[in-house]
Length: 420
Image 1: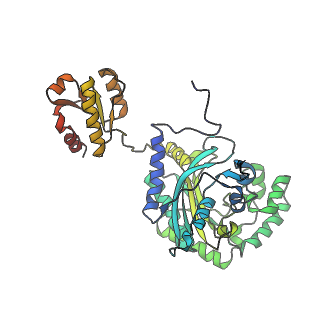
Image 2: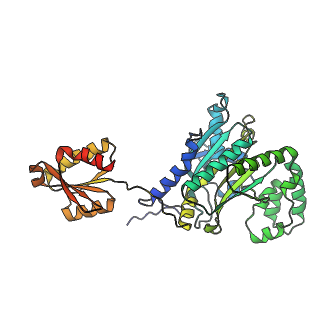
């Protein structure tokens, strides 16, 4: 027994369950790959200031949840708590926005790290698949991303999720709302930390999950009542495009995402079967983030969907993914000559695209056949000295139990034919 365990709030992905997570990642990525999004990967840690400026100094992520450390060279770095800011940093650094083909459309898959109180559905290390469309202000982009996320979830068989939609306005109309909200919050019985947050960014208070705070916010002014005509028209077009695509959503005038960089369109995917951690993904438009981190004006929109939460949603709906067996053929050699011959055939099968495995460790027939059953292989090849002397191997169909003698030199072609 090892003396080491996974750190608190983390988990190991192990087979066979890990296959579900891979299938979820693939399902989320598939619609993106078919819609012009290219893969991007950024480091697992970045300069602390990237998140302080972009995510927001008043957010819980920056003030409480980031893993921050100092390098031997004196640099202050943070494990990434989210990936939008790093992706935008990478696009700016590589000058992809200057290539003349805007928007830059990218997708990513990777781990995030936040120092949170661990509970089911909330971990300190978690996985997301995300998409960003950088450098264009177009309601059709916002709608496209929402539709693609909906398509991904439905391809997995999920049906009991809801899409919440709101607009957070822009730099023209939000300041007016901000002032009205601050006036309202000053009249509430809030603790000192919450009042301080209200002075820095009052929208953060609307995102407070504590019941005693939410109870006081029932009469809070709504941002939709302060939207300028331009933001109203933009939001209405997003709504119309999503509706025309047959994607159902709910208007949620109190929806506020937990990051400071969001503007205009904001949305969240929630699944009521997950209890308090009901959000399975979300995103929105972040037109000012590029300027916040020192870049030019690049209006952008994106989302991130939680792989862990999506797996929990599948379990809540009782959905079993149709994951093919990792192995199609399992070889069982009986004797040294059979080991040499069958190992060569397994190698040949793999080269021909057939998933094949081998009984290692010199096990007897009984133990090797147990391994063959556990592998999920459709066919097992068994060969001993007598078989090889006759120039054949025994091919067993693991579903029907039927066993047939096949010529050694015919086994690869025979299995390719049977497996299609």
